[in-house]
Image (cartoon, rainbow, N blue to C red; front, side, top):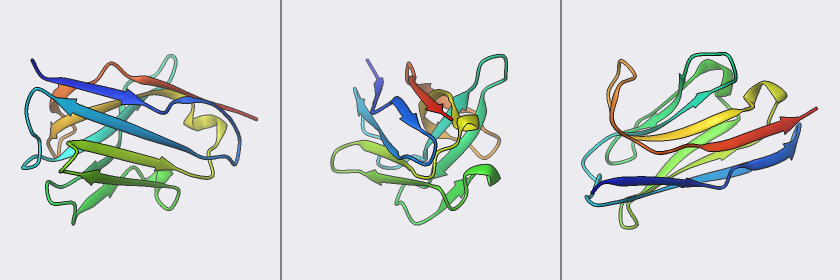
Length: 119
């Protein structure tokens, strides 16, 4: 059974940092794109970041460029999202996804981790 388990969410003040982790089990995703999405209250889920299977290519939502960094460790079957200079509008449930395509769909999803940024 494939599982994606996120961790690292929490409450942080504006300007602070958090590092999210997503550990995959049940199969390896070393040949697949991995990504992060988020869903704020009352809003649709949106794409945040995606990283290619070898980690050489990354894509970001414009609003997080320069503040968030996605990375991966294929040996650990884990993907990370380093979030710096957090803003209240970054508050959302953050979801890890595997086999992410360019249109924002994915084959596998985690359960999500809450990130709350206070002003």
